[in-house]
Image 1 (cartoon, rainbow, N blue to C red):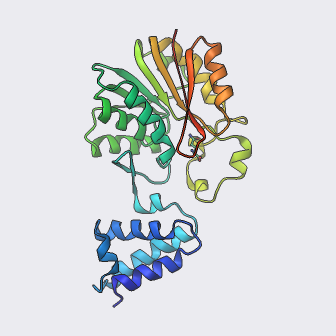
Image 2: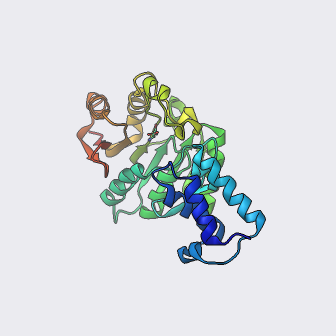
Image 3: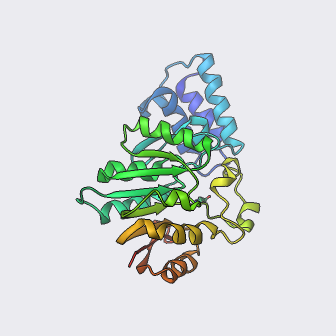
Length: 277
Ligand code: GLN
């Protein structure tokens, strides 16, 4: 039988073409053996069934299939989320939005908000945990919605799931006097979709493609959801690289004030926010 140390080395070899080989191998091992890193380098034998499972995952990952889908779960903002085909994988970039909104409203009670195009529910659930707010997570795709409801349960969150199309007026009409609207809508352009990294190509295109110029959702959401905010309420988006002028322009045109940007940890403008007049 192979030892954990030998198997870990083999996994590193299988994953060698990936920049994140060591991190990936650690994630795979942690998934099977738990958190204890020391165990990765122990002489303890690994039974054949576990060995072949681990090798299988490492090979699929080396071929470019998302590790997050292989593991079936991923962490976002310190919380666990179940993921799989049909739902966008929570990304660290998106923590920029959560951190900003959580900090902005810190200590405020009785807040009401919505998370549009909620996907796995990572934004809305993290905000509910941080703020104890009343928040509805709206997602249109039934596959993604199944993950959303699982993640609410997994995190024992009071966030409310809603299966609906955020681009329909009747959906927005159900909400009034909101303190905030947050969204990480699909924002990739037609060109981006043709040049997707292999890993991203396994994620649902409905969660990625934002129309030819990537901006379809921003203009529509801004227009449709402005009436659902209270005066002074905040609209806050995650955006793609270089979209800050177009998105802020659409917001200003619809009367939003104090429109500002925030950079992510790579120095890219990742969040745009503003307030209803
Ligand atoms: N951030 C994702 C990517 O780079 C896109 C997610 C989105 O469109 N909201 O692939």
